[in-house]
Image 1 (cartoon, rainbow, N blue to C red):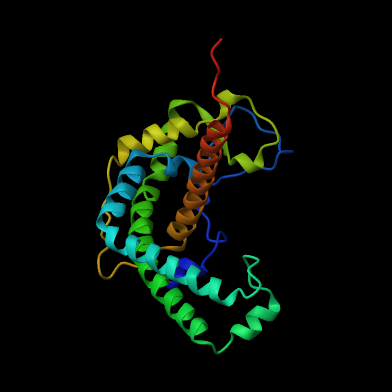
Image 2: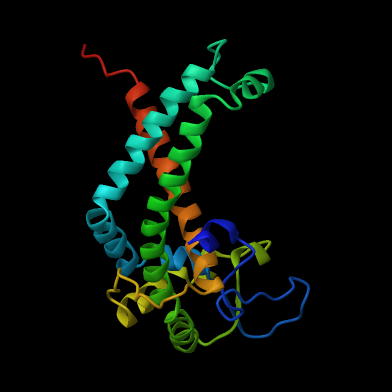
Length: 226
């Protein structure tokens, strides 16, 4: 699955899924705004599939965590000035050391384990993506929309123009669940890889915000009684 790690956000969704019109164009009729990656990320099928993958690949996830801990220990050994990072001099000194060889091995093994998990996730995302255009068309027809824009193509809009939640509902109706075990001959499409990477970014941002909110709540002083 090297293709997954090397193909970056340049592999986007289909043109229909990410349709955009220049802001200066003269358009008549209703305009809808849809974030395709956000819609896919919010589907029930995606959430359920990711939960199933976490269970099915629990052993691989545990091994990755263990290898990351081992790598951190090795990096601490190479951090001679104990400043929490390897400067240029420390990196040069680390070359050809047993720790460097072990780090390379751990990195390779972690990448192989991660590829198994990512493969299952991409396969799940691809099945949802295959239904995206049909779900979008359903929402377009139901709301008499003539133009669909991606959020980054819009300078201003009223909240009612955002149809992402409606597309999520349409996707949930069309694809309530997906498989997480790819066939042996399956190869991911570039569109699926691009969608997967965009979904991962959305989930990472959401997790970071949730963690920050939790930390902020913990730091707030407890109310004192009078």
